[in-house]
Each structure stands twice: as C-alpha cells, then as structure tokens.
Image (cartoon, rainbow, N blue to C red; front, side, top):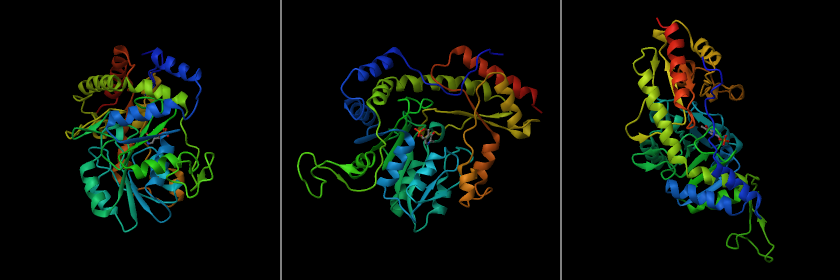
Length: 385
Ligand SMILES: *Cc1c(COP(=O)(O)O)cnc(C)c1O
C-alpha cells in the first residue's frame, strides 16, 4: 500500500508560472491590467473564438453567459443532472427555471432525445456539459437550437483542449465557459472565461462582470466628459485579477502537454481495466477528442458482491484519493425543496450509484499509476463474484 495520499486531481505549477505571477506583483496593475487581456487573447486564439471575457471563477462566467443570453423570470433552460451544481445554479441566479434532461447511459452526457422532449415555448437556452472532457452531442444540440431559436451555452469546465469533429471546443457554440480551478486542466487559482464569436454577447459580458458599468462612448446614453460612466443594468464585481491571469496565461503554454499526459494515464488505466468484467471503462466517442478531466470507472454490479461504498472506502483506506462525480443536481436538498423529484432522471441516478473517479492529473508518476491500478485490481477482485 502507498504511504502517501494520492489526490484525485492536482495542479502542476513550475518556476515559469511562479515568475509570471511575481512579475505582476512588481508591476503597476494587480487587476484588470494587461495580464487579463493577454490571458483572454491566448485562450480565444487557442480555441479559435473571436472574443473571450475572463471572470473571477467559472460559476461567475456561467452567470454572465445566462445574463448575456437574456435569461430571466419564466424562461426555461435545459441542462444535465450529471454535473456540478454550478451548471444549473447559473440559471437560478437569473430567475430562470432549470429543466433537467436525462443522460445517455453510454456516454454519460446529456441525451439529445431527452433535450428535444423537454423543449417548450418557454425554453430559451441549452447548457450542455462536456462531462469528463468528452463533448456532448453538439451537432444535434445545435440543430435543435436553430429550430427552436435557443442559445447554446457550453459548460466546458472539463473540456479545454477537447475537440468535436475536428474543431476545438470553444469555437462551436454561442458561448462556451472554461474554469481554471486547480483541479481543472490549467489553473489561475480561481478563474473562469466565456469565449464567443458574437460581439453582442462580448459587450454584455464585459459590462456584466463590472457592475453593469460602461465608459464606452459608443454605448453611453449621455456623456459629461472623460470621467463619465453609466451603470446601465445590475452587474456584479466578477473581475479576474492580473495575478490570476498571469498564472493562467503561463499555464496555457502547457495545456497540450498536460492533456497529452492525461491521455497516457487514461491509456494505462484502460489497458488495466478493460479486461476486468467487474469494471466498465469510459466510453470513447469516435466523433470527438476528449481532454480527459476525469477518469470514471463504472462498477458492474452483476459481477460484484460489494457495493460502491465498500469499494470506495477500501480505496481511500489504501491512500487512493478516489471521488464521485457527481451527485445528480436535481437530488440535492435545495433542488428537492424547489420540487424536483428523485426518480425523475433514472439514468443519471443509476449511474451515480455505480461510479468512482480515479486519480488523474498530469504530474502523476509512473509509480502513482501503478499504485492506482494495483489497488483497484486487488480491491475489486476481493469482492468479485
Ligand atoms: C468546476 C466546474 C464549474 C465551476 O467552475 P468554478 O471555476 O469552480 O466556479 C462548473 N461546471 C462544472 C461541470 C465544473 O466542473
């Protein structure tokens, strides 16, 4: 058994990252200076989007996207239950109604057949999540969006560096959100970004992240002079600091190497677990290239005498930092109080009972990988039928 605890995710910071942050600390701007603009440009150029707006975190970015999409009271937004709460909460911040559409049990992503069933005259947007880094069924989702005049906001917190039918995630939908939390592919400490090709969304996002205030002479209703600004709607202070942006910018240079390393680890896991009847390894879509934020094993309960909890606890005992992604959002107490029903999303609820996320991050050593494989094999074989 390993003697140190292996977390499920961890940032990888080098001297270049540290120098980039220190440089900002010695400069004139700690916030909303040149580093934020440089980070935005770097991400926009990388994904092939015209505009990018950095936010204090990914959740704030999603809130901004819902605002820019014009979501308000009475509007319905469709998303997946198999995600982090933020994918749905952003709709509630704007007074909208979340409508969950169940997942495809094979891909674990939102099922476009379920999306279509849930479209009503009140539907305004769809928030697909590239769960674990694997893009959702974007072609069909965009078709539905065109047909019903809906905005598509991709929650790509797991998917910077991923691509769909040869195109980078971030270049395809009305707006796409990335998160730079330390467990994600590249980090800025906390941080998020919306990328878009539409100037109209870009302008709204810029203003939203800074109180709804503008100084842009083209946007002002009156102009008293060079000091003049207007607050034109209720925005927030969701700005990213230059300290964060400098880290994010420096990390972007390593994104491709980070993703490549994740893929090596995934290949080792697949090779080890595919032959085991007790484990179902992640499905790999042929239409997309996952950026592998998470590696999730599904337990084949027919082949096991123990449940997920026993296996999870035993792996934790062996210092393997396993996790579970996610508790379906509609089953969380707050959503239960809002009236969402347990049992309404059978595929997501069943999946939740059977999954374990294994450690996956670029600085894992060969020994770390062996430790995970050895522990999973021995724990699962002990309870195999
Ligand atoms: C991390 C994450 C978010 C939120 O990002 P933060 O930067 O932590 O606010 C949203 N959606 C999903 C699916 C995430 O994994």
